[in-house]
Structures are given as structure tokens and as C-alpha cells.
Length: 288
Ligand SMILES: C[S@@+](CC[C@H](N)C(=O)[O-])C[C@H]1O[C@@H](n2cnc3c(N)ncnc32)[C@H](O)[C@@H]1O
Image 1 (tube, rainbow, N blue to C red):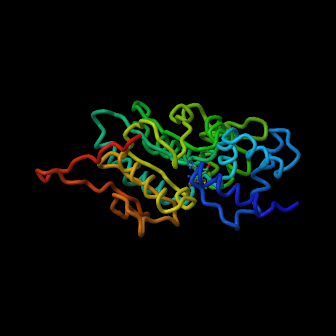
Image 2 (image 1 turned 90 degrees about the horizontal axis):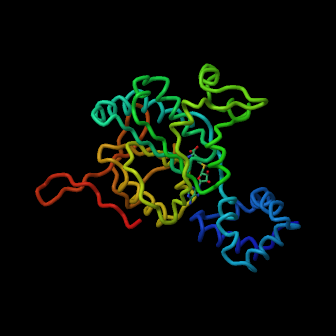
Image 3 (image 1 turned 120 degrees about the vertical axis):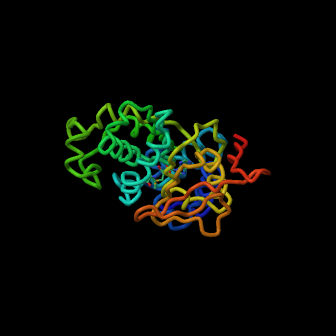
């Protein structure tokens, strides 16, 4: 049975309020597949009953439902070029810059089921063996508990590993478990999974050297996009790097970044603010 216009509007409003995701009518057909697992989990007969339950118990299941209504599409080595840029330019530069602290902190914002985080870990392991003795942290965040569980587990189906992961890297960094493939502990130990709603309040975060904020801003309205980018800038090292998704840009967005082409990809570097002495100052910490 098709959802009523009233229920669709209610769910759209809940999504924008709780996750910043702007769902349009082109997403309506997805609502059923998104919400059927929630309906089953709560032992309800159908989505209409779920909407009635949401109205009856305001706030109780809102975050859970909002997290379910997100698009989790991802793959290993998605878009390829950012990982080439890491290999050729970004990591060599950071290895030089951080040679004293031997610390590297990378953020996979909106990590989905973790393929981006593992691609990063594989790139580091494969091409920079010296990082084994460094303190490397790949902070993987998402709004969805199920996606974080999947990232933590590092367990992928044959279909998932066949999307983007070269077979030599699969054989080297994954072990077969039944019909699935588990990432080796040497990759998993670098990946630190945390729940974070990008559209909500952020806690105190580490200072990142590299941020992947890919294929998530597209779901937000302009104000949320700008807020996410401004807060990202506050948490990015002055010589850090931000990568957006292949089809994403900062055109018409008020965000303190400058565009830079590295190898064959576009990345964004923090715009330095000049203090009264004309010296660069770090951007201030935002109010989270
Ligand atoms: C299309 S996937 C992108 C995954 C990965 N970054 C990539 O490019 O392959 C979008 C991810 O954003 C997450 N997401 C959506 N809204 C979010 C929010 N407000 N805060 C944090 N994560 C969010 C979804 O749960 C989903 O896992």
C-alpha cells in the first residue's frame, strides 16, 4: 500500500529535523525499503503503524528512523583519484611535516559501511610501511549505528569486495570467513568508529590532518552544508586536506577553504586567517 501524502511529509520533516537530510519525492519509493526493517524490529504491522507510533511517542524512535532514512551507497577505492593523491602527494608531504610527532589523524566523516576507511588504511599500509611505527588513527563516523557496526567488523560480502578492491589487495589484507571477507586486524586497529550526526552538535574532536567528507553534503540544505564545512575547517590542521565527493563542490557556499588541484583530483585546503601582525592564525574552535 502506498504511503499517504501526510505520512510522507511527516517522515520528510522528521529526517530534516534529526539528520539534516532533505528527502524529496524522488526518495518516497525508498521509504518502504528503508523503514521495513524498523517496522519488523519494533514488531509493528506496517509503515503507517510506525508513523502512528512516532506521533504517539515523540522523540523515542526519531533518531533511529532518521538514521534508517539515509543512502549508504559506497565502495572500495570510490573515485580512485583521491587515493592516488594520498599515495603520490598528500601522505609523503605529511610524513615530512609530522616526522617529529609521528602522528597522523584522518577523518572519514559519513563512513557508511567503512569501505572508505579501509581503502585509506590499505593505501597507507601498502605504500608507506614506515607508518607501522607511527600513531595512525582513522576516525570513522556516521549517524547510523548499523553502519558503524559494519565498519567496526570490517566484514564484507563477495559482491562488496568485488566493487573496487583489486584482487591482490583483497588477498593481502582480508581473510575469508565463510562467504565473507574480514579485514585484517592490522587495518582494523587503526579505525576508530564513533557515532556523529554531522547536522547536530559535535563533541570535542581531534585536529585532523586529512578529512574525507564525501557524498554526504549533497543530502543537506545550504545552511547545514556551510555549518559542516565551517566546523570541519575548525578541526583541520592549517596544512591539512579536505576531500569531497567526485560530484561535490563548494560553489556558492560560504566556507573557509581554497580549492587546490592535486595530481588529478580536487581537494580543499583551509584558508588561513591573518592576525593583526599579518601572521596566519588558526581558525577558532566552534561552539561544540
Ligand atoms: C552515500 S554514503 C557515503 C559514504 C562514503 N563517504 C562514500 O563516499 O562512499 C552517505 C553516508 O552519510 C551518512 N549520513 C547521512 N546523514 C548524516 C548525518 N547527518 N550525519 C552523519 N552521517 C550522515 C549515511 O548514514 C551514509 O552512511
